[in-house]
Image (cartoon, rainbow, N blue to C red; front, side, top):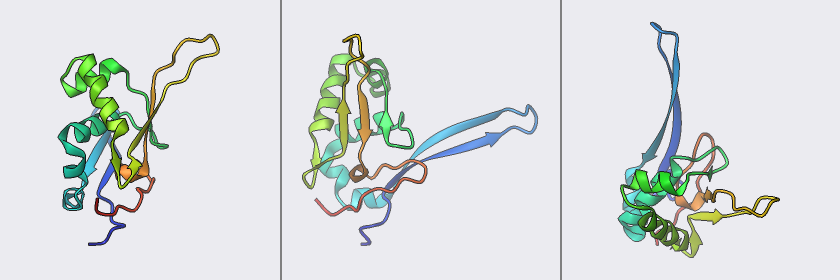
Length: 139
């Protein structure tokens, strides 16, 4: 198997309506069959996989994501406490010793907490726009 092959990607597509003149941009997460064949999904498990996909649905070109706890819980179909546990499990998960996502929570100048910034790391095999995922080796 070619290890440098993309397994998952996030793409955007803009559609134009000739009748109304409106445009709509949609973002898609693509998972390639090789993600399963390489063992990534089996190793991380369904809970981590779905949590990663939900968080990645908020990803910008740099891999940064800013979903709220409420959004993560709603998109996972669970309560906030359960969603927070799922996120902690994902943050602690390692593929070949490397994290797939990082969570940073900063304080404002006034000392209040900002939203958590999640960064989807290249080893996760999720990429958006022209970003390249890291080389994936079997776990």
